[in-house]
Every structure is written in structure tokens, then in C-alpha cells.
Length: 237
Ligand SMILES: [Zn+2]
Image (cartoon, rainbow, N blue to C red; front, side, top):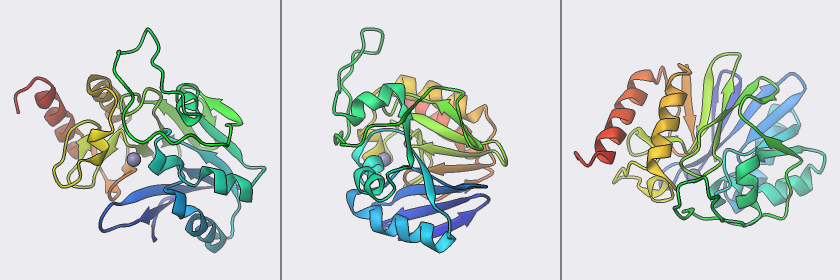
């Protein structure tokens, strides 16, 4: 596991070479907020990282309910039974294995690995909610209830799989041949593109994603990724 320090965050990367999966520890005055929980095998290393920082994990917030983001949720929750567990209202259904689509949503099947968890969230998130310094930003598309977390202290955006940087910067749904997996697991590409534009408008200072390295000053790269997604959706490339 690799630890990368930036601002108030630490990126934890599992399998950095082959299939990088990231989760994040965000420092707050009272302790840590863990964003996503990696793979089922990641729990021990996440706890060791928190011990190294000498701060308790008080909150676990999930960007979405795919297996590579909620993999260690049950184990970590057992180790920290008092930690708050948060996910969007919409993806809470996926977390318990319910993949049904609402009549108001695009009638497309949820894709990617949905791995039901025993842990129930203690708090359901809506756009605009605050978790310490983090603001909850709704960005559906990869899953119907995907959210990002925007650190209001320094404009760092933890975007989950709304973007990827591994194999080239891309909006969720754009296949990057060197790392196609997030695209293949994307529920609805037009929705993901709308969300990507919304995230770009936040003018983040850092883009931190589920798969790939952190981007500093990411606006140009985000613009290029949005353009590419637009052209692909229009069938021009
Ligand atoms: Zn992922």
C-alpha cells in the first residue's frame, strides 16, 4: 500500500502498478474521515495508516457502492463500531444489494460489482450536506447515487469514479484502453458527463479519484476529458 500526502489528505493506494484502487484519509481537528474503503483485503492497511497518523477514524464516507470502494466497510466498521457511516440516499440501496431503477431515472441497468454489505449507514447524504470540512456534491452517472467530497479549506475534490486519472484523465464512461474498468462499470454516460461539468465548475485545486494519481491544478485536464466524453457520446470518435 502506498501513502501520498497532500494538503489535509492522505491518498492510500492498493495495487499501485496493476489495478490501482484509492481511498483517502482526510484530517479534521477531531480525527479522520475515511473516504471509501478499498477492497476486502484493504482493512488492515487502512487501520495501520490511521495509527501512523495517530488519529482515530471517526467517519467513513462512501462515494458510491461498488465493491472496490466498499470492500472493507464491514471489517472497518467492526473495528470502529462508533464510526459514522455515510453514503448517498440513492446508493444506500445499492449498498444493501438493491439494483432496481426508479421510474424517473434512465432505464439502464446498474453496472459494476455490487457487493451487498452488512453495515447499515448511520447517516444518508444529500447534496450540500457537510461532513466536517467536506461538502457533499451530487455527481450521478457512474452509479445512480454517486457523490464527491469537496474540501472547503483548499478546494481539493475527492471525486471517486466520476473521473479517472489512471490510463489518462477521463470522465466516467470514457473507455481508456490502458485502464478501461471504471468506464465498463459506468451506469449512464450522459448523466456522468453532466456531473463532470458540474464538478469542473467547482474549480478544484486538486483532483483525487478512485483510480489513478492525484492531479494538481486539474482544470485543463478536466476540460480535455469533458471534450473527449462529449465527442464520444456524439459518436465522433
Ligand atoms: Zn472504482
